[in-house]
Length: 188
Image (cartoon, rainbow, N blue to C red; front, side, top):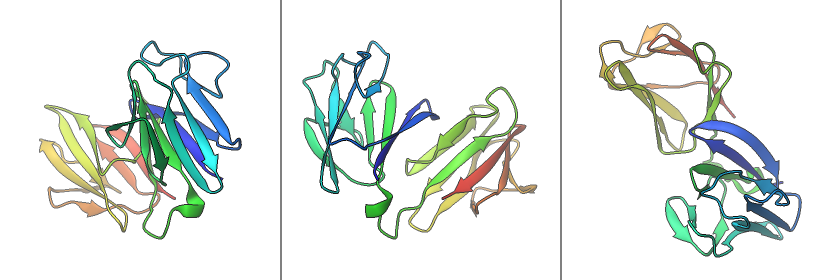
């Protein structure tokens, strides 16, 4: 069954199963998916299921609905597509129609101020760290994910081993450390 994973600034807020033929998104409390933010219209968009296919339709919202960075009026959704409404990202997950190439990954923050947060790795490249301290990227490929050091004096570590600019493939359960923050990579 398809679902939407709702996140803000990389932190997953909730997952909503698309069990109905029509799932409404908007700021007003009667929507199926409520996004309480002034950049979101009262009735912003709707996800319609037609058999096994899902479609997103913008309901003439003020700020528009984007799929993978492009503004849309109505568009079919495919596994892994990212719908943007305001600053919120809603990833469309349809495992049944994912195909063999879809690999999902998540970073779980284990220590520091953001401990407990999870960040879904939905973009081709996800940047981690702070400018001037240490920055790393996680690149999503067909076969999985790779971590590489981009800048900073202290390289990231995977299972205690420093990672260079050439990068290293990530495996489920790997322990990451970047600028003193402990994280775990989870692959589904």
